[in-house]
Image 1 (cartoon, helix red, strand yellow):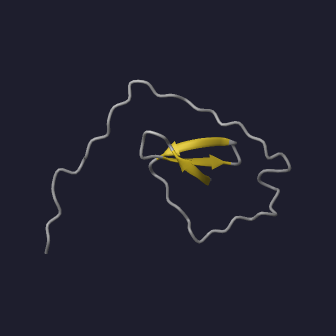
Image 2 (cartoon, rainbow, N blue to C red):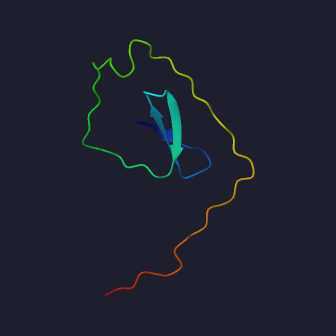
Length: 75
């Protein structure tokens, strides 16, 4: 997956999957900061670099609430 930005109006990330050619929106992403992009690797994307991003609007959104009700104790 390739980080492409942030989802507007939420605290989610947008990541592009070059294999399925889809953008995924998720809050649960782990970044591998040690990995490097292989610019010469044509096996994943091939010569065709065009892709379509499908954007699905969610209606009836609910606001996220804090799930932790207890404060951390200092030791």
